[in-house]
Length: 206
Image (cartoon, rainbow, N blue to C red; front, top):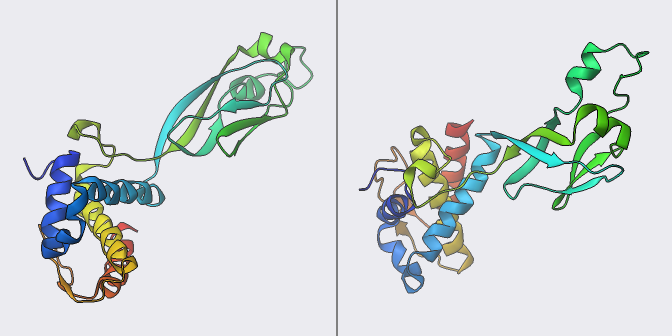
């Protein structure tokens, strides 16, 4: 039913907001509407950060590892931190210099690479926190954006839709419906409305 965080319900309400303008995307079924929602979910990473716990299986002297598919940026590593805090630097089991976690393209880099001695002492499971992307799922329960931010998500998706219309050189005024999103401009060119709604989104999301 409309009103949940499922992809189908969000597409339904996005169409309600776009009103007649949705006909500009009618040849592709729901594909473009789903794209606008996916783009909005990615944009949410800037305003609603999502932290997950990841794990790498360490290999001695190897510095590059595959990054999680949903990573936006690494946060910090946990491997060896407790031992480094609790042990004396002069102790024989002190972990020494721990690797710094960085992201390079689709890989995570540990610099310096963990040594065989460190892995033997601290284990091969390198746990770390990272910022993860948001996504919208067919099942409402699997959508990572909270229901309280539903209106904001639809607002941001509307901006992407209007920007798409502007990129298609559609300059005639369009009319928008609120669909429960609250106070928003109802008439204007796609480019003008996109600019105004983006400013409104940034104010509300901050």
